[in-house]
Image (cartoon, rainbow, N blue to C red; front, side, top):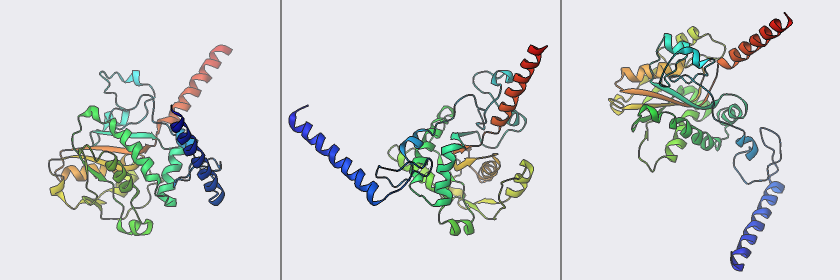
Length: 287
């Protein structure tokens, strides 16, 4: 490194340090997750350490819906096509669903910042996470799909001011815009009936609650096309399954699902199973 370039580097570092100190002084703020004072200039009120703690899903998951598998070797599938019990009993209308991470911890808080606190810069981070989730669908041969976000009802859209799934999808498409592989069609799918909150409902109640809530407004935009259905969270799959059925009836060739987060129902079961094994081991040892 030359003397001039070294001086420039030192000057840039000094200016950057002054800017960060000035930012922290004039605009004092704490990380929304851990409470640590923020020193970096950013529109997102979350420190880099907390963002780095958000990790993608690991371990064995269902090859169709993405649910965590408790004992994958016991299912007897070959070639990596391992399915959970529900997908083996009832095949969903979508070909495959992929999610970036588990809907808990920092990822859950980040989604809530966007969804309930209108911190719109969070959409850019979530869009990058969605891109990683979509990379998990490439093995299925997905080609130039139409990107369709799960819609909000008109009243909810007016109340919130935006559709979080659409914002995330916009950021995702922006990231891959240079490839020309995917296009966003935000008005293809519409929610024609406002539904009750799905929280606390059983799977059957969720299906009844969501049935008939969606319609396709522009079928010519999806006829014969592959669809990438985008939502923020995959909970039980009831909403995306209903959307997929409606899209297929309107002429879509295939439907894939990509979400930022996924609720892993088998997490609780795995803990219970592990504790049961521990109790059995302790009983045998005592005997």
